[in-house]
Image (cartoon, rainbow, N blue to C red; front, top):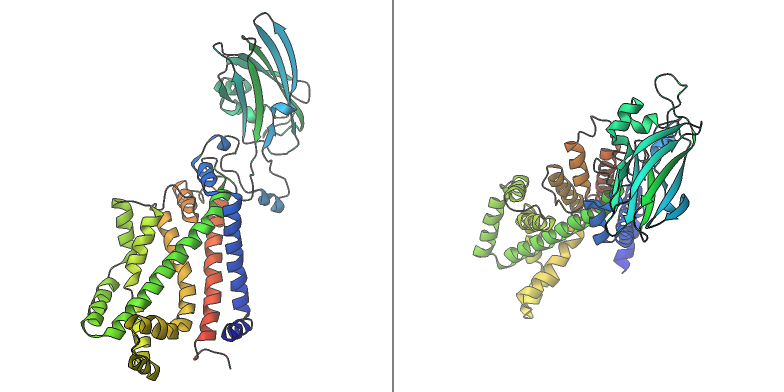
Length: 443
């Protein structure tokens, strides 16, 4: 315990160690919060898609970009059935329903889309709806009528008939000031969407939800499939840390035990271990992983197993062997053999603990290496297709030419978290090396 306290006290003398430890604690806290706030099953559902995507804008920037702009980009506005003004007029065998949805729009920029979601309940006869757009300056713009199903979406922005009649994009022309010259200017105020519905069955019901899609969304923005990138950035943290930690622990401990076994028994066992290591050292890990992902599977657990298997007989075995050879000849080892201590106990209890302090810094700096390896595989298109990870986000950004189209946030988010992870572990690892390595220890 005193040695641990002495080590912590020495680490506090290095600002880089404190900063690195704070970064690692932040990442671990973020990982814990993510697993608690967004359970694994919910995260996969949100990432794979579903109804929750429909109300997200496409390629929306993060909301924080408004901090650096003189004009505020619009956010998404939802007008729910609870906000609607409803008038019902029953008739024989059915009902006329007039619903008015008020949209308060006070932005200088136009929305990216306008959609009307209609949910209706009926047995056989579909309801018929007719829509009218009312502007703040008193104009009435008919938007046509149609029959609607149980869950229908009226894509106002993609209504070609309306676009041809208005002379431009509907979500621009419907909110444009008719007195302004080109380019169009937003007429700010309260807009109304009046929907007159005819229900042909006495027990039929209808609900409306108007969505004005913004140009900013959340803390991380959205991608080309309307997915909230916040899910991938948050869940990429525990996945990356778990991959890096498991790979580092698996390779380091296994490699150390194998090296210690070869040193202790010597002879053909040590020679066999060294020959296997030398063969494995010339095998390129990344091309092998690419081959496995291309020909077999891109499961993250399979990739993790291959990484651990290839990392066991690495160059570390030779380094550990050089450190363990003098320990094998130490007097206390001879004394243990004289007392009849078993081989396994000597290896695990007497030899390995002597080199652990020197290995800790290398172990810490090894974690981000595997984190970057997993991200690199995902960027190459060999990441697990089911998991939302940092590398998968960057791969999608590359596929969709995000930087070319100006979607810098799509790359900045995962790249920043990857660099932060590498920085935190590197700063702590280098400080630990100065503490545990006698040649680098401060006087």
